[in-house]
Length: 278
Image 1 (cartoon, helix red, strand yellow):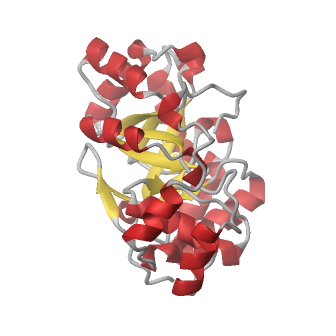
Image 2 (image 1 turned 180 degrees about the vertical axis):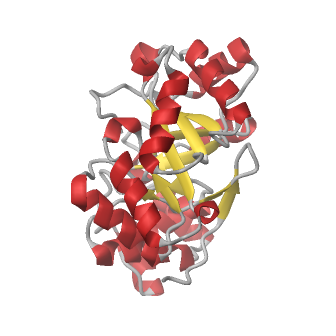
């Protein structure tokens, strides 16, 4: 098991969310089981899944077979918007498939046609008060949609899971989420990032790391939880060790400005994709 220390971010409900998690999008069947078990054995203590991924049972089997006490692993899952009116049944089905008594974080997966779904959000928040979900949040929401939820229900999401990578960096997004006390979870951390760029290869050479590890370390420096994913055991382990890296202020700034031609998450509405949604 890895001894790599991973910083945590506090979220509502008293949970401490490890800032490097293991993403399971597009993982299914035995591949999902083996990858999650490898991640847990490597030292990951944060697993991200979703009803729309169709891999709850495989993730749950890996959690059970790892032998790691339940309270040591932070488990995130997501509710599909088409479960409106059936939120309790969906949550009960999720914890049953995962083989757990509760999830640490339950996210509303995306806003269909930019509808924030305040009634669904209210139902999720009330279920969280019962304890089956320790905290609730959203995914693929803009801060304007988050504000709409707060206005309608009086409850602000603890977390917003959005695409986040050097090519989608927007400092205003960090400010807007911090002002609302909403933690950012960043998915697709390496998407569209040119790993041969000197802004990544130079710190990688200095630190004896890979450019991919540098990208993940940059997320942590920006206090953004990151969710790398892989089916390759070496890559799974390497991604976690990014937590050991410390970038200089100049290196962080160079990565911030790696590619300003790509719009960042808060600059345009997060668009829903066909299910399964990331």
